[in-house]
Amino acid sequence: MRNLLAAVLLACAAQAAHAQLTIEITGAGGQRIPVAVAPLAGEGALLDGSNATLSSIVRADLERSGLFRGVEVPRLVPQPTEASSVNYAEWRSRLADALVLGSAAARPDGRFEVRFRLYDVVKQASLGGVAYTLARDQVRATAHRIADYVYEKLTGEKGVFSTRIAYVVKRGERYELQVADADGMHEQAMLVSNEPIISPAWSPDGRRLAYVSFQNKKPIVYVQDIEVPKQRIVANFKGSNSAPAWSPDGQRLALVLTRDGNSQIYLINPDGSNLQRFARSSGIDTEPFFSPDGQWLYFTSDRGGSPQIYRMPVAGGPAQRITFEGGYNVSPRVSPDGKSLAYIARNNGRFQATLLDLGTGQVQVLTDSDLDESPSFAPNGRQILLATIIAGRGVLTAVSADGRVKQRLTVSAGDVREPAWGPLTQ
Amino acid sequence: MRALWTLLIAATLAACATTTETQPPAGVEDRAPGGATAPGTQGVPSKPVTGVDLTGSKPAATAAADPLHDPASILSQRSVYYDFDKYDIRDEFKPVIEAHARYLREHDGVKMLIQGNTDERGSREYNIALGQRRSEGVKRMLTLLGVGEAQVEAVSLGEEKPKEAGHTEEAWTRNRRSDMLYPGEY
Image (cartoon, rainbow over all chains, first blue to last red; front, side, top):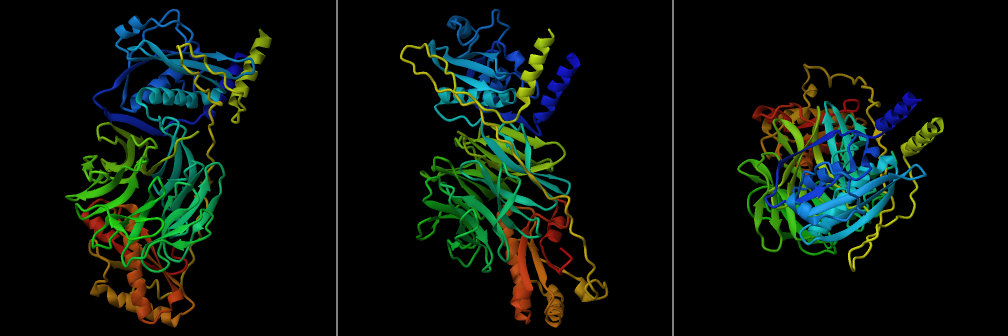
């Protein structure tokens, strides 16, 4: 009997996905909020697929953001819960500014209930709490929700712990378009191919990815629902089809076609209908990206003699040049608040992620690497995910928008590239 | 005891189920004076990703007729190489393109795919555009030499299909190229 239960538990564990993407923090910000996440009473009965507890996942999430430092919590008897009265002086003596207490319990229907409460230890006040009803396979997702709650209460900004990222892994001659949780766990393949895959782009509702696949020996733009294993061709015109970007309302895609010769930007519906030419230039126009208000299309063009970033009103009008320093500025991505622009600049032969303040024109180089590519903002604008090469291997780097906090995301035995950070989920 | 185990197993199996209905949330009561009760979350959606696997379907290579594969024939040469950041065709490659133009004129039912390529440096998408310029340049020369427009398609693989895997100047020189391919060769 005991063995049978063990077998069932094992089956559960096998069903849960394992981390393929390893995240390592390589730099942290100066001012980090010390937060104590006490083990939730009863959480030992509710471990995730990798035997992690709720509180350890919450703490790891908060620390990974670079804005928090986990305070060590000793074994407490009796274990405090969200219903306990808080001894603020005791937590203050542990140098915690914030405290999370909670509990987990099995319900009669086989599911679980997790409750927690967040406290401001300095002000000696509760900041609120939530209760969740969940199945065992939702432990990690629930912990991310708790971390999102704590992050938002303490920073005033949305947490991105429940979001997903997409990226491409190259293992030998095999290409995999992968989707994983923001912590690198739960990696699942959307597409596996013997030909390259590039430029994944999330639909604003997080349900679909547009991407470019070379499976038919040329670049063709596809859209695929993350839950339905079926590719749909959006653009397969004569020549090359590439660089898809969603409009903020999800109704249109900007993309690049060469059906009339040079690489030029077009707009199309995600089902491939209603094709419309957007701009007309004698040079290369590529890498379109919508501003979050949907008013502007940013893009790369060599119309001035070297690749630079421009923007044009989506409703039509003249193009404005945005970058002026240097001879190679490409891959524009506007921040979610519309106030800054991440792109790749070539500086003395090094390709580096760069941030431009669109209000002041101030430019900041974010990395000291040589081969940065494909920047992608987190949906709260706090971090930028990008691809780079370290020691000959393709890795992803997440850098905070102030350039101070850095994380490295690697896969075993493969190159990882082409990151795209998904939207906030409801 | 036995009943308890059965119950536990049932609960565990239920926990294995991938789709889970959730009940209305039970919010934690906020005891802070004036504090509002935070909304609970309707469980936590964890949508499965389902993917497509294309690796099993390898196209069968079809043998093409000579002289395209005769090493003694100029037609066996298929690549045009470029200087860094350039897309103009160097004089040394013009006889190769002229020979293929002749072949295509004499075989107007035969189609050609020209794949433009770049080295690995810079933006992948910008390199798609650069590679396209290279393949378009070859296509333009072919059509100027009388090859039918519909016979030739120019596409770009950007930096995605390097001939040489290294990160050296030598590898980059080999990778900046256009490849002229006939049916069965791609």
